[in-house]
Length: 302
Figure 1 (cartoon, rainbow, N blue to C red):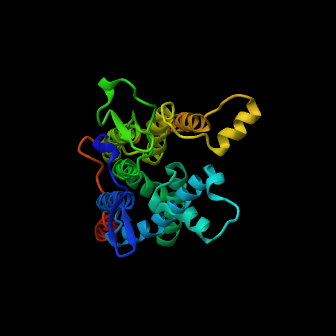
Figure 2 (figure 1 turned 180 degrees about the vertical axis):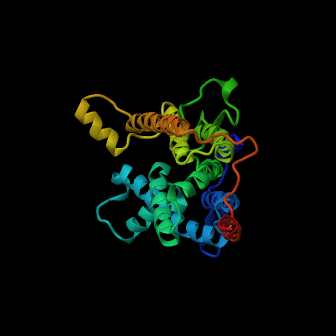
Figure 3 (figure 1 turned 120 degrees about the vertical axis):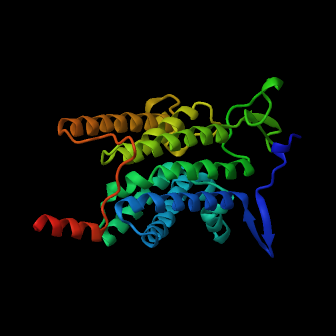
């Protein structure tokens, strides 16, 4: 057996409790995203303590939504009869894997909306600066899928292609499969670099917010062609409706990409028509702090 099939999902144990690699990588990804967001949001005068509060609201909601999406898509596995305590624990057991990012992001945005209402901040500006860090968190989190031996693609039968990271050995299957978790990680890292450059140099409100779903859905929709997942409940409903196999994820992702790109083009055209500067070669200047604002107002009143 190749070493990629010998990995263990559990990193270590403390008494009877186990700490999974999945949880470790997810946590590390969140912390790094938080640190980058703290630095970025200083540009619009949001303090680090307030950013921490933002994450403490967003992350739980994102996890709840992401788990809900996964459970709904695999309801026959989780909603068993009788539905006892063990079944309930299995339903909420995120430490064993099973989060759907496409459901998680709306939960995070809902948390951001609540925070912006409390702190009286512009939701779109906050999301513009912070949302691309989710891509980096996903890159790191995907290594949890590696240790869980999940999110792989089609079987690789050619021995010349049976090497990591092109392929990964799955012990339960006893065979090599395409390492789609790694492909997605590489593509999302490229997206993070590109989107980070854009939010630093391109000043169009809403462009950063739309760029994340456009990129993620393009990556996810494209990789869905080779992923080895079982059809979800929506696929089954659509297959019964149309009388043919339908991949609802691909359809949803590509529709989302088209809508996001269309809106991004509209934002650029609208701002150009208004004659407002769009690109800043040396980076978008930060907003003046409150003392600087007062000083300018005093000078203007003289």
